[in-house]
Length: 325
Image (cartoon, rainbow, N blue to C red; front, side, top):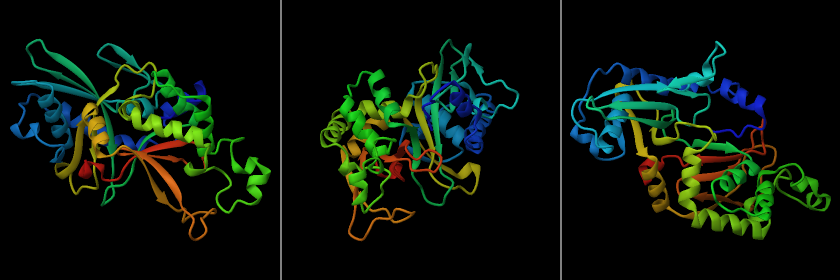
């Protein structure tokens, strides 16, 4: 999960794990520990096929990356879980990895492969996990309307001020809500705290739909890899624990290079909307009322809605996408 810090103090809170991410690092810590116990290995033939595997996640990740990057022979590996950045209790909120001081990192794991014959490469890896019996949505990116717009602009994608306003309406930023418009809120039968996708400024909405259609690969790649300007280990791979497992050696994981995942996501579907109704909470929809949920590829886009930061913009990976693409 990537948060857009609003100031330096907020950035330190994010890195310190104040919002409860500590337990989430157990999975990547276990992968790193397992990889570091393997003195030397060769790549099994089966590692070159498929994306969804069952077995030891550390071994599976190691074999997958080694096979797809052309390593051969007897190999050595080492791994570091960057979760230490968020769980450090001694005030040291940085790691030194291959000579680089890392204070903020989108990668949850950093893996180094060594052929023993002069070839050594380091890879950043993002991890996701589900511990339910069936796969659920996985949070990918958490920001604000302005934060997401700025991310795209910084990376060469044009976004107009009008489109930014439309997205702020969708998120329910103060000053851009139905409740801020006395005439609109008096007759409103649905949630007065935000405008739904079908209600936001029409030209701004059309611009977003054009961006998410014509630049789908670029936007997907940014959400999968970007969080911090000074990040020295941008993820090149993703490992996703698909569901609850009975044992470590019988864990099902999906593994992709980021390039593969971006392409497969686009093949799965372009920009689309799906109807839904609000059935829970204090602002349930009246019978017969529905809204449009935007999505592109395997990524779902929604207003955060949590009590702590309701106006945030949330991007999720669709539940069970690894079985569908």
